[in-house]
Image (cartoon, rainbow, N blue to C red; front, top):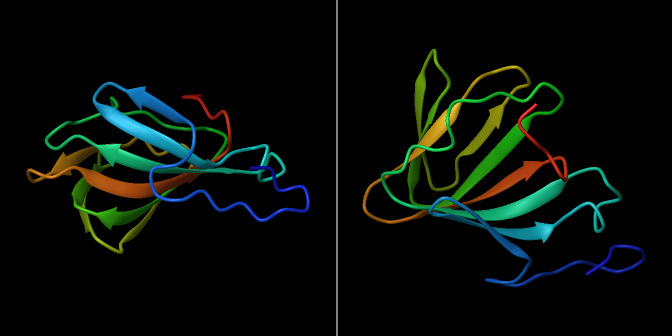
Length: 119
């Protein structure tokens, strides 16, 4: 799955997996596929969980696109309910967390720089 002259097309359920608490991430395109500029991950969050702890990123924006389910983004000043086909952008230096709502897992895309950390 490299982009050096090749189209990248991981299918449903494909891509390197990692977990954070009860949540699952599948890396659909990482730095090796995107010339080091960004990463796209499929994310499945466990219903009812509020995680991670409120945090901010100083060097990049974080974007989300909801595919299934519902989540609440909590940024300290407001609570935003996001459902299927909603796009969210968390700017640099904005502290936020989220909660998966309902009884079904949330599934969505997250895009951020590869190897991003809480900085």
